[in-house]
Image 1 (tube, helix red, strand yellow):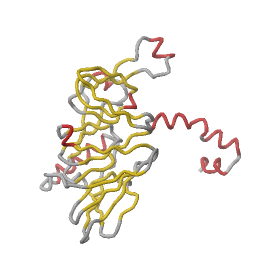
Image 2 (cartoon, one colour):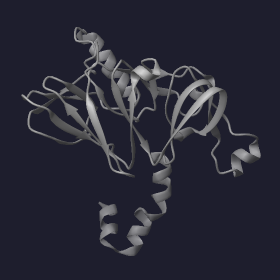
Image 3 (cartoon, one colour):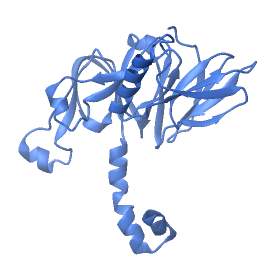
Length: 255
């Protein structure tokens, strides 16, 4: 299915959102709960599947939806369609602070691998499926880097990164990355997860036990503040400290 041709604008600096402009009859598919606002003429419908295969049978839809559960995403996707007579807009934002990245799938040979919680929205016609990294190292790290999402199509897709986005083009090179900092990459790259040096550096280095390794030629998008790092940084200011302060914030944490 040929993807719908959508226009867009990205707003904000550190906490961004994307506004999609839809012509009459155009549709954008988004993660459940990502919508910020929509104008008159836009209607939405919750469906199992991305709609990239209109004649897909019920069993195929169930298998597709089931693969999304494996990646930790919602069973359903929300389809926003402009059923008005003129252009109309709908906006989306991710559930935590960061940057929205627009990717034209035509520029990445129509395929992109995305971390399991990195997909935000895409033009109708984009196929979303599970991507299993068969590397042994990836499977040994509790699933991080093992179960990913694959986007296929010829339209625009939007992914979300925590903090600032770093783009790198590798040309038959190797890049070692914190395992949580990989947002997306071209499948031409070989992705694995390996031990972070010797035992001493793994225990005392502060970089975790494992690092992601990218090898080959292709584009990779990285994030400076993955959600797990943000949670870890905020943890000292969480439940226990809030209780000690006796503040309104403390009562919120207790709830």
